[in-house]
Image 1 (cartoon, helix red, strand yellow):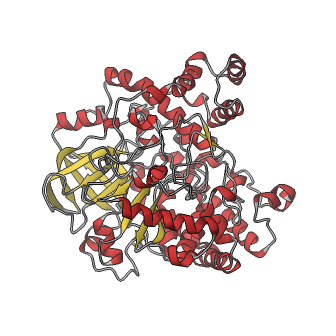
Image 2: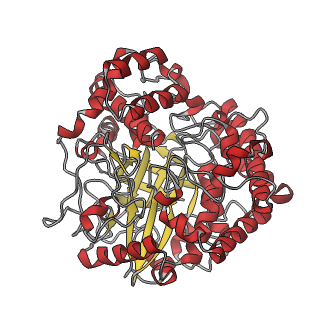
Image 3: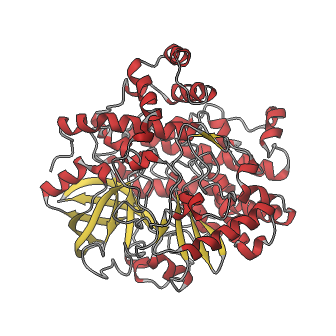
Length: 591
């Protein structure tokens, strides 16, 4: 088994991958303590997989695959095609399980390197009808890309669970492939029938995986919208629904690159086709009547009326409290407007957390101070509160705002105060440090991991100090107030946010190809996030037009002609139609 890609495969995918990396960035820029088994504690849950999978301190996953099929899957990872493997989970063998690479920009970032450390989806009923893993249909294992601490996503879900959000189960997982170490991952339960039965005792509700509408970028296969699904998993597009394909360079709703296709939860009109970021990502069979219930809720949200009739307000306030503390900007909080699930039943909506590997400032954040002092009363970046009605309308209600503050205080008291956060990080460090030390496919060195653990501890404590100050009124709690009273903000000291890793991998650059490097992005880490952000702003100021004047400015930043041509290519991708977009309407939740 070869963990290195062949040179020919790298060259074949290189240009497509580079475009995807830039596309991912442009969309982002422009726009006490519980134990390590806490994923299942205090829930009252009796599902078998709660204990037999997520009850382990470290979940053991052994993948047994045909070497040729495994390597072919890796060489063509961006296609996200399943292969059949046997899987041993905590000592119990399951035959003929489906496995495939998964991810959005994270998948293509790995594909741009010599590393094969992809995130994966395991689907136990893909080839054997009704097969489950102790009652669980499928789960994902995330590769820790952008997280040198290995803890950012774990702690984010743990905070959600602590405040009472019905988050998925999660736990560290040590993976081997054909007897060889593949690395330490984070296993996360998928939102599907198993989750619904566990949490809601039935499967009559609707789940929607909210992902940005990437228009033709998705059609070309360059950017895959479906984190939990792929073209085989997502619903087939119904004949009576049409996605509005807007060129992603066009300014829609103030956000270059991201058209308003529903992820903002803004009411647009009564046409379900206007909300493709929601309805094209339905988990399971869905029909127009299902969509109209959600649209009705969004219409009520737009006016701020009957909110408790259409939304589980208390559950959403808990979600927002934890979500705001961890500063995940690859989410509803920014121009991305994605990476969360909607659960709807009988016309009532709640919000469920998803995809937190870029929390704690791993996305769009160039300095630690902005993460530490992220404002709790205007928790948005790159957009206005009016662009995010779920925040604007809930916070406009003094009762809801007070409750939101109360939940934040509960999290500060129970998870951060009196050394609790430091103790939690140290507990996790004790659990996983030896696995990280032996992780031969890691995106960072063990020394970088150790540095990241210290930085995460510092960041968490300073973030808690700022949130506490914002709750008490000693630290400004809105963006406007922070601009006027910057002297009252909590200092970051010498904390470097990039020590934790970022969307481009460790140290602000693309992921290294294991410990031996192998980075394939032009000029490697020298083209850092600051330069990319400045480039995106130049293009945005020019309304997406890459004129000779814009090219001159980009060259002055240090970009070369090859890198500039990538942006020009993205602008022309509207006419690229090589891959159908999965739609909605006729696939079961088990697919």
